[in-house]
Length: 226
Length: 222
Image 1 (cartoon, rainbow over the protein chains, first blue to last red):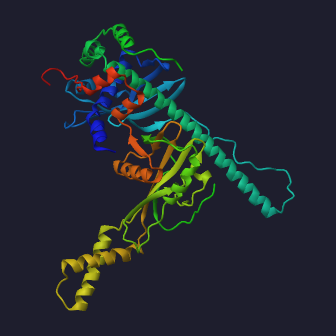
Image 2 (image 1 turned 90 degrees about the horizontal axis):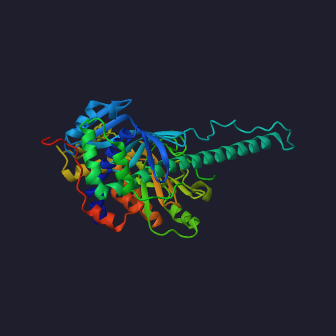
Image 3 (image 1 turned 90 degrees about the vertical axis):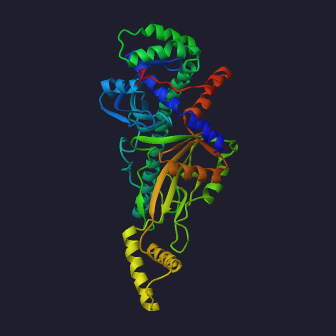
């Protein structure tokens, strides 16, 4: 990598933290039902772990079923901390996944996918009961080869299925990031989002979700649905 | 699948292929560069950079190379071992001599005592000591097996995305180097900046991006 690219990457790592706090804000404001123009509605909420810090200051690690709902979480925001990583739960097209999103690298850890095909889940290795003309040893060898081939095929199928599901999760995160950037890089960010996010962090009740939704819709360009 | 599966004595730390089983922890890289029309031409450079086990006689403490994704001892790679439809799947294997410090120190003390007694001197010079340490290290390499670490890599060639199943920065730097040497293509790590470039910004957004200031939700005076 060139030094210029490294510098550009490093100088904008904070945007990942802002993306995560924005996801948190939207998840609470819209009762864990988010949407993108590309995917429509889906469920997304914070769970298990939330880590916040402010660079040099000591990190706050909050564990639990709903870490973002704890008082300490909002208090950390008010002390100038932003999320570094968070456990997320996603429900998309009735399929559930959970993972940890690391804000500064936008990387995914511990991604648990819905159940997929696999050698263990299948009916087991193929054994033919039909008599074979070949000598016993040869038949045994051929049977073993067939079994290995079959296991290899199943392994490949499981791999393709898992990659497909992984891409679904990644595609949703990319769509969310795209919409976040549309908002973050528009006048609506300072005009509508930041004041509302400040009120939310301060625990102000009765935030007008519709006002925010309108501002968001104006900033995010229409996109063809899947 | 074919492949050489000789199993030398090594310390082996490898989880089953994460892309196949269990939860997935990985970093994404975006592949920078043009791909050839025929991906099978990659087989030759992959085979060229396949893992070659460490030899105790060599002056090499660590080496990385490719192996089959689910079998680190399979280094004679065939087409079917690597190409899964549009995916190129490889194991990134790193072998390293890791001689336990206390063992090395004990053996070095023994060797020093023997040399001092033989030469009839009180102590060895710094240079003699360094040479002796190299000698003892090489001797121990014949007795202590190297440690092995394998990380799976899956390259979705259609999307131009590599998923590397480790989040260690050091291992990431090593795989970027080997990938460039093998394929002549650069791996650009995913980050807020590189993902923004990938999803695409308009000219106005690009300008706003350049002037971004970090958000704070801190209460005044905090």
